[in-house]
Length: 417
Image 1 (cartoon, rainbow, N blue to C red):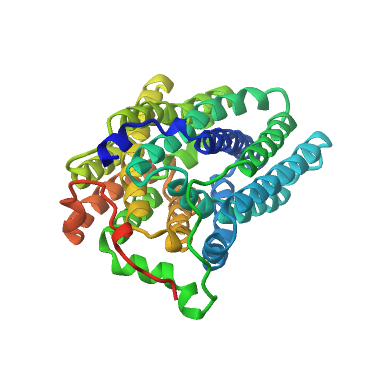
Image 2 (cartoon, helix red, strand yellow; image 1 turned 120 degrees about the vertical axis):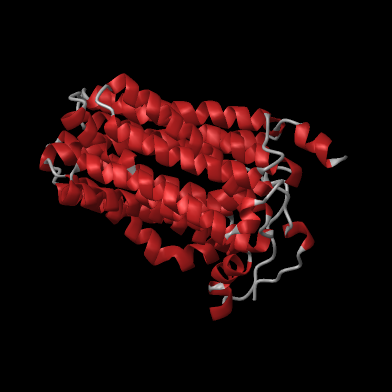
């Protein structure tokens, strides 16, 4: 069957992809609900933007320390099993948070420990999830599958923050309890996935194979440029990490307002992800990615200057739309240009870059806000994101000129030694 006909088929005709998609919704809803609860609880206990930043740091550190290990695990063991185990660990950790909160025995240090445990589980889960997607559909359907997977994330990101804010008003233990149940449901769904293609054969673990993901990315400049762009842009433009402080101190609202602010970028991202699933980017992919990053930076600056919650929500919608456009282009490029036997290790490095930009970005945002003030730190971050996009356009001209998201991995006979 021609690639165009295959690409036109819906990925939801694949039962395993359907299970994967719903598991991802459950997992991401839980993570988003927990994020609202943790952020609000930490800020309520400490009233410190630095403490908010620490939440991101303790979640990032396990990912940094485990990067080389998780790549090997994702390439040598059953990926759906890894995902299921990680989701069970996350659910158990959140169940402990629920019990501790109910008994009023939860200290910020205990929250940090729980977040670190969740970060370690996600360090294994994320690269296995990324590497699993191409084995669930045909190669021509990968961009569509990634777009729908992104839409699952954004659907959950719409439901999760609003639900987290509402449930927190009933008691901090309520959102944690729901998260534990949702993670267990995700683990059950993940365990029933049956890939269309078996992953590549296992190779002996050597020093060279451990570092193979890093070497592969260094040798493929389009992949290097795409994931490093995300690293620096989100590292600088992490306004969402400061939303609890904006909600309480700038926009003068409560947990429900924080839920709405967390919901807004997901609304923009979801609508854009669904559009891209039906109308994949077929031309000028590189230009569109860089344009989206520049819009992301401008939206970050505009958000910092807003004093009205509804205007702030509209700006965050635009920010989410720009972000997901970049995500779909970058994720499709990374998966399509990486052979299956390398996807776990390349995805592990990619997850580290994403984790650095997200979790370490939260820490950076908290620190700079404590140094320069909440609003100036956000403005500087938005301007920095724009400058990074302009610099990367010059450093990676082939990425800027990229026309189509067409994979080369199928043509490459790369053996992970």
